[in-house]
Length: 113
Length: 114
Image (spheres, each protein chain N blue to C red):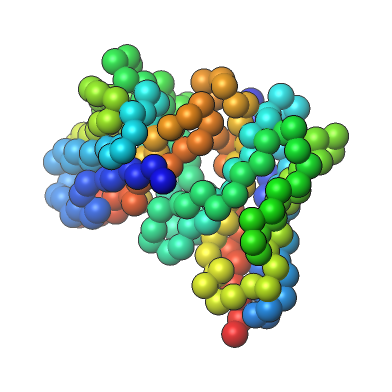
């Protein structure tokens, strides 16, 4: 089955700096890669996703890049703000199949004011 | 966007009792719903996949007789923790799949078994 590894487990950045979280996946058939943000005690919220037919996707301060050959994808947050502090999870799956999302272990991002 | 509700948000029960958690997709039909368990500072652990009108598929190590799942309609799935014990205390989160890939999560249920 699919295996997703996520790094780092914790990340602290100064407000205004950029943050990068990286994930690798094992199943080359996976073609859908969402990112979720989870604040303490709350539900995971989908913040951005990317499909394997594109290499990069951007939404304001958030971008995701995908390298299919290397089987890794990354989340980039620019101009970080304190409200970006949360746990971020990457995930992978094969779109159109019955497979569920396989999640990474999560990254606790802390943005220091 | 798609909205998933979960009830109750938190529950405290005595050891040996059963607890039912409901997961509803409010503005879309979900043929598939998922139940996760999350321990503090850990990732989401998939417990089972719930398909409307059929038996749930449980992940390895999850006792199907202890965690009963029913998906009676396209908008409702329930998880019943039977004969709950303190080690069952956790944060339980459901999600519903709107398209063939996108999952939206419920707000979670915090279960405390005394």
